[in-house]
Image (cartoon, rainbow, N blue to C red; front, top):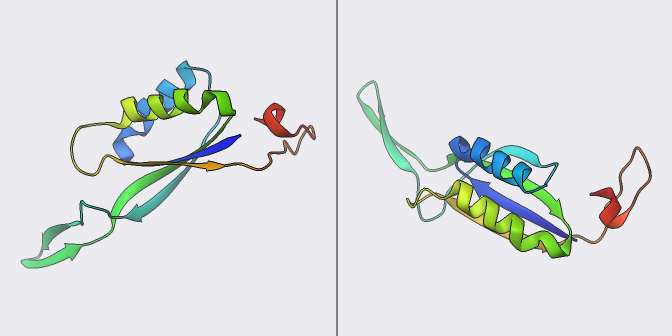
Amino acid sequence: MKLIIAVIQPHRLEPVREKLTAIGFEGMTVTEVRGYGRQKGHTEIYRGAEYQIAFLPKLKLEVAVKDDRVNDAIQAVTLASRTGKIGDGKIFVVDLEQALRVRTGETGDEAL
């Protein structure tokens, strides 16, 4: 099993969710986060004063997948979140040692 962690722009959440659902992924966790990478924030003006916004709003998606579905999930997230502009985000894949469905006690792939 793998845990796919994707950091995307907030307005791309619905297309990503729809794409993942369409190919059979049933659940995900979404967290509102703030951060920056190459985008490095931006400058805003408030009441005539200019100030730097270093941390930009993003969403972090976490999806647990079976090993044989990793590439499908990565491709879906990539296609649905890409705008072609800086700040589209990142995808990380990490090993998921164990999963347990609390309600039924199922473990491993069956818990996903």
